Length: 195
Ligand code: GRF
Image (cartoon, rainbow, N blue to C red; front, side, top):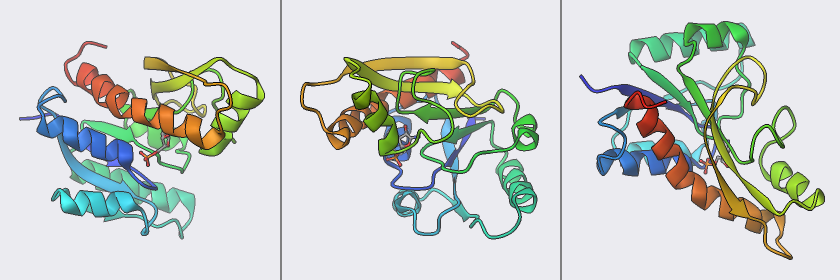
């Protein structure tokens, strides 16, 4: 039986798409994406899932967090997910949720953690902070999810240069392009037990 992956995404889902492409190329260690969950009914990630025939589940954030997380746990358990991959998922998950899938939740963050991680560092804000600190390089990190925001052990990291005159949007795009090879490779290593 293939290793089963569930992806959680709130937005565009370009990382999700790169994981789908890697699965099709046999570059995910034989793992299969069995489910896409989104907290945002408007997420383009849902459209991508439909295009590829991947089952979707939308869990809009309207109830209390506890009830919402209970639904999420049940959804992931009924999909029999071995790994939970966060790909641009904007909700912070509680310790209770994390304990259900201890050591099996992974995230990608667009900076060289531990730099520019934690609450408040998301989207363009990460890249604005990198530029404000006059960094010469940035990058992305794939890491295990623990209770502290962006604090879990790093699985794989890759750097990209910061170019003179970069805008935060340009830097974001350079990092994102690199993420599209980094995340599948990190997942392949996990699935193969190489981490
Ligand atoms: C990526 O930059 C990822 O590192 C961060 O959120 C962004 C998601 O982009 N966690 P996309 O939705 O995969 O295009």
